[in-house]
Length: 256
Ligand code: PGA
Image (cartoon, rainbow, N blue to C red):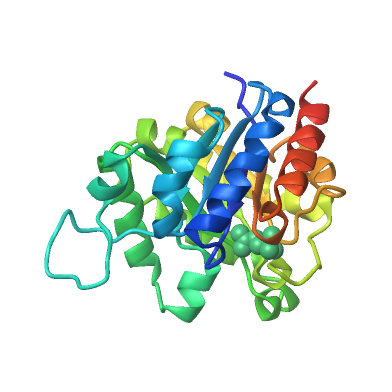
């Protein structure tokens, strides 16, 4: 089965409701550029999700950046999976490096989140990636495949097939530096190999793997052109509707 490319924006802690509405309106005006040969999603801050659901062009799916693994409870300030699923959230990020680093999320917690996202009927986007010292030490493959193994623990092959993995080298996020397409392809292939080892080649061939880290309109095609890279997770360059459309067109150019 062919993997449908996925262009996913991660807005992080940017955009008010008014700004999100303006983005959605602008994207709506250019929606003819978003063909159905590619899937699109925006992971907005929680407060923007409602306006995004109402205003985004139908091709663009709703994503969230975080979730708590429990169904409900006394967890002040947290959002449960069912609350996100209720109003049509399709994708939820788990284990973004900013959450791992700044909020101390462990592999175990990330795994709990992945499971909870799936149980609520949404698609988990498991984020993995090495930091600069791990890269210097030459342990990128070990770090990344370890994060993938832990993140997918306890899942059935069928569940794994539907998960999206985002490979984002930590040193490339927001830095203007990217991995080379060759290096990103190497890691993506290793990710697919570790999934194949555990869950079989057929399952591994269905998993979509995104590259992330300083992706922009002028470099996205070089990543998506790689065999094992099925799209991109984009921070800064997803905030501007014109740039989002330019990336959509670049990805569509590779697909065609
Ligand atoms: P960036 O962020 O595109 O701004 O580097 C990517 C991400 O953190 O998902």
